[in-house]
Length: 252
Ligand code: PEP
Image (cartoon, rainbow, N blue to C red):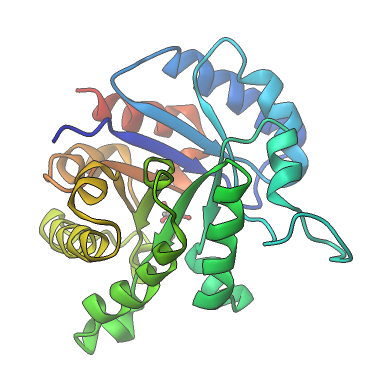
């Protein structure tokens, strides 16, 4: 099964409106209409509209970093997936480790988000990954299995709109990267868990991205692993000088 590699940039709570617009233009120019890789950017909510306008003339996909699992209502400060769709967003990042461990989101809430994002006809990129303590306690696979249970919300016919990003928490923003072997082992385990939930065909087709201090210098080796289908990039996604070579590594 060949899966088209996906390179995604998580811009987190960074950049000004002007800088995110400029970066969007740079990413659009670099990626263009390449068909041998997918490129997604996740700007902060308030820059979505500007980024969308600056991505035109490319097939870079516009993503949002989060949402609330309700269509509308009295949820002050929150944003519905339907509002995101109205804004031109195509994919929503869910369960990022900063939302799990800094904001305190739990699996049950993330599962509700998966359900509503898919119902709103948007794609889901579900982040999973263990902490250092969990890895050292040999609990990595158990944690992945627990976090992947959110995929039970995926209904028949929706599988093709879901991707997973394995991001070991200890590797995010720390400069420590999982070795290609560690990434491959976690991805293969995740794929087998996904098979148990959604079946063999969905599991074989589903892109599983690696995230955690991916840079130009380590991207190619990580992407060469059979079950690593792309990269979710944080720090190195904030300039085209760093992000461009990672995009190129996906189509090398
Ligand atoms: C991320 O935020 O998803 C991430 C992987 O960050 P970094 O690349 O900076 O480790």
